[in-house]
Amino acid sequence: MKTFATQKKAKRNGAIAFALSAAFLAAGCVTPVAGPSGQYAKPIGNAPVTPNPTPYSEGLVCMGHYARTSGYRAPKIAVGRILDYTGKADLEGGRRVTQGASLMAISAFAKSGARLVERFDTSVSELELKYANNKLIGDEQPDNFRKITAGSIPGSDFYLVGGITELNYNIRSIGADVFAGDLDPLDTKGSIGGKMYVINVGLDLRLVDTESLEVVDVISYQKQIIGREISLGVFDFANGNVFDVGVGGRAQEPIQLAIRSVVERAVLEMMANLYAVPSSDVCDATRGAISTNGTTGDFEPFGGSLEDYNGPSREQVAAWHDKRDPVLRGRN
Image (tube, rainbow, N blue to C red; front, side, top):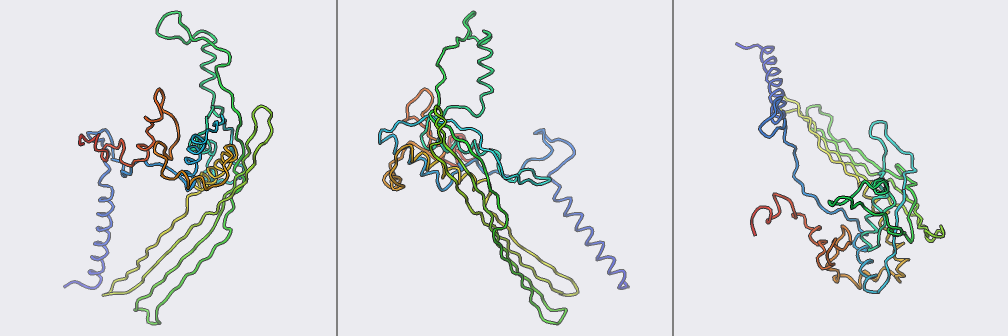
């Protein structure tokens, strides 16, 4: 006959065995010996690559379309350094905001139809120029080295510089936690809680005339970012067992996507000024008329015409994905 202590010990051993089994089951996809594929484990996740637009991307595309149909000459734009001046950093995670705002601005100008000239990273061009000057770069034919031609590099009309100047935590927050249950310790108890908080980011950008160094446009924008947290818990005794269940969720608007949105809005307003756009109503006038453009860029194919532009295909989630693209799967 089993005593109470024996039964209690058996239950404890059973719980330990269950926990160990669950742990080994979770690690079942990891082996200390590489499999036939040469990997210890197969990475999880199969989400395809998708475009990364903001609410202002469509406006940038319509801006370029408006300029082309109106006969405006697209200016040549260079993007300089848009640095992080917030000084906010974590001890373990590093900088809180993106260090790639310049790259975001380049993408934004590309969407707006501007002609871009590279000034952000010229290291490869400078090395090529050095090799060509020493007659080290040539074609397949002997003694046919690359010539250095004066005036072969186009200059810019304007350049963009500035910085991320604000990252303000906890502009406002609110939260509530509720616990409910009667005085009987064996009855069910429950709790529910929620929190919301708001932060913001800000940028200051300026557009400069390259020849005169005159600042022709200055824009300062900010965007607020919201986050929320919800939790729910239940505590109960049943049949001599204790149940403590808690669920919850946490979500925050991406900080880096907010910075991209601010950059795109600033570029949109600057290009509207350069194109002499009367108001944002031009996007309503051109809506539905844009057939060769996409929110990933606005470039004419190299060696082709604008009719061959693959902008629409860049928007397709299934394009080029081996498990989603019917062409790659051999089906028409």
